[in-house]
Image (cartoon, rainbow, N blue to C red; front, side, top):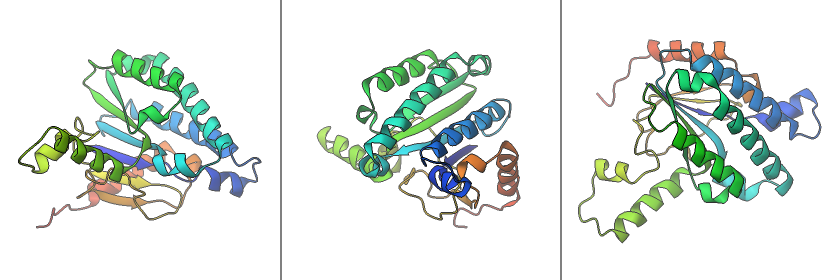
Length: 226
């Protein structure tokens, strides 16, 4: 099972709680992610978890101060992830997708190190989408196919050129923050995904809510166009 989460609402949470500056909402969002991952590694399913961590749109439109803090928080979080014993005990492979070259060099090096250290893990798969946009992903794939002079294109060929080539289609997409849109997340892979939109902001999202969302998914009858 592949679950994708749009972790939205950090700034909205800060506004709701009267936190100033609003950037503090990202710090609370980091704590929420740590709680979820600690819980997820113990779960049998989902085997695949993909997180919309920082969009290419946000990279272009957020202030330099906010972006600097976000990258700093990501670096702190990934350093912690690198040292977590449960990642290695549970054989979790970690991927990073998106225009990683847009990240600070130190963050790029850290992501490469984590991917290298977990590349032989095959029990579960954790993916962070950073400086990511679904349209950019598809456009990049087609440009690469043109460059390599691919003559015949079908769904399987396109998939091989995507960032997500190692991942299965998304079964369930969850979005927090009371917004009901995809925001360019995994556009190719969510074709038949079930959708859950939560009013709670990301810092308010709990492991219990995650379990309830999985139960809701299991109650649904997927038809795949039938």
